[in-house]
Image 1: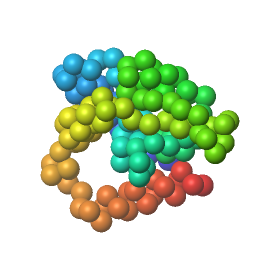
Image 2: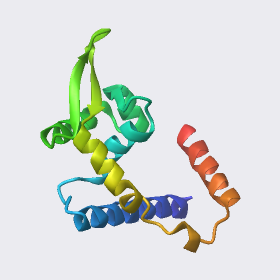
Image 3: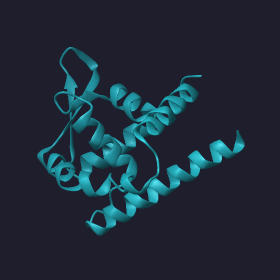
Image 4: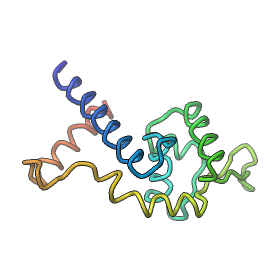
Length: 140
């Protein structure tokens, strides 16, 4: 089992390095992998491009306190807007700005598609089985 976890950690580190390299190539050295996760979650996992902090935290597997600093950094870069939820004043609604929408539109194909799936000798069934296995481990 140790080898499995080591492989997962290496894959995560490799992905981080590949994404960071692509961001630097596109002139966004100040944007981190974690920041892109927030932007991509809001872009692709929500209907309106907005969510509350807990939904974002759950969606990108971060705790709410570490998410706060990511949101603050994205607010400083004019990538997010924060407003009070009128239905529950204790919750903030986080939404993408036009700048963030353009960032995702311009960079998603190149930055997040860092692996050439055609070169990886895995079938769709293999990828689905791997995904199922990873989710079972996460849920246990």
